[in-house]
Length: 90
Image 1 (cartoon, rainbow, N blue to C red):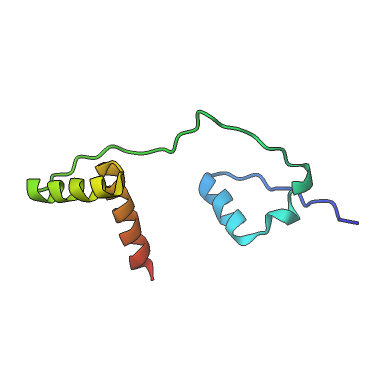
Image 2 (image 1 turned 30 degrees about the vertical axis):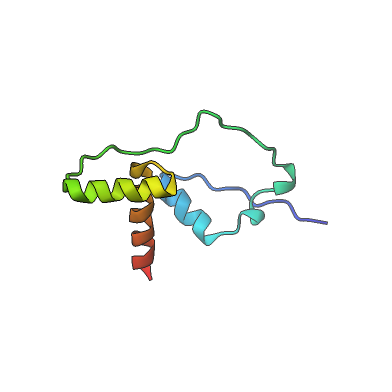
């Protein structure tokens, strides 16, 4: 027989909540057997538009690489930036 879940504390900020969940197991606080699936069809990731000056030759090389992969060049740039950041963490 399972024990009753512990109450989830109130959080003053999103950062406080994030720190709490990074340090605690959600199964101690939430009965996941009662969870229901939800759909959030209009949810879009937040993003910020930036302006970046690139040499024309570099941009053309990026566009060629993106075309070979059949992806938009801006998506390829985002992927490469993310991969580089992830690689530099270790």
